[in-house]
Length: 344
Image 1 (tube, rainbow, N blue to C red):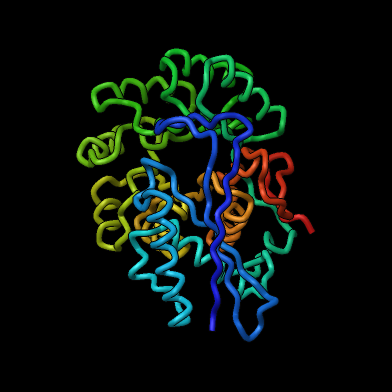
Image 2 (image 1 turned 120 degrees about the horizontal axis):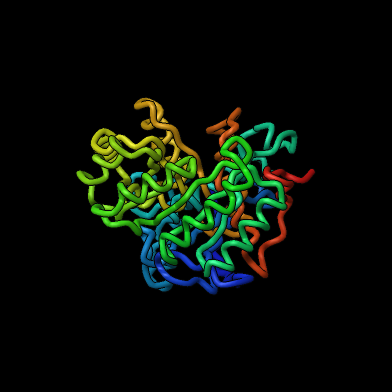
């Protein structure tokens, strides 16, 4: 039999995280601690948290906790995670799947017996430059380059596009695409009318890819952009809320992006993310995984999944957001230059 406990913790950002959905100063996470009553000293822990106005299962905290208790009670009663019922609650599914994976690994942080989990190899990651003023973003770009990142992701859409091009040009004037890979994330900031012209400007700066150039829900326009864009397009927000196989297939077959960017807490938990990767691969679409403002508990789970899904990848993953909090949970993972490592 299993026993599940739920606790709530609030994390505080070192500096406000500015996104297309607003400004985050704090972040609430529910933690599920899973035990087998026959061996109660061994535990698995998972993190359940949504992003307001973005997650498909975002709801008031009291309602969220009530629903999470329902699923945890069902796990205690049946001994199984009810994945079918949890499809539309990906953040909760991710937390329970993480806890179960750790419990089955004997409580170790190496969930899936990978070289990364054993501390033998690191996972290449991108440096993330958050939205801000021109000067703030320029400073953050400089910091990421000095820290040794060979791949940098720049969130755009907060300031004038011309100024954002200046930022990108500042990098390209000193570093070729072979030295620094630049990814941009527009978070749907472009209109369909202006998107192609902006993509052409970005192509002049040898940008690797752009995430979600136009707002989600415009499949026809997005499909046309994916066909004609000189910059490879990656889908992110577009995947949110598509939690069933037929929906996923329809999106991929209609839009035909070059990449999909997967956040397990938004895109179906561990099982749903794995399905996205498989469906994308069948269609020649590449993918990478990124965290979604989790603490180190969630970040480790996302990283262990990435290590299992992409065992030999040289493609940078988006696994660095654990550095954002003043009061993060201490955990044996660290960033060394451009890679995430498990500390032995």
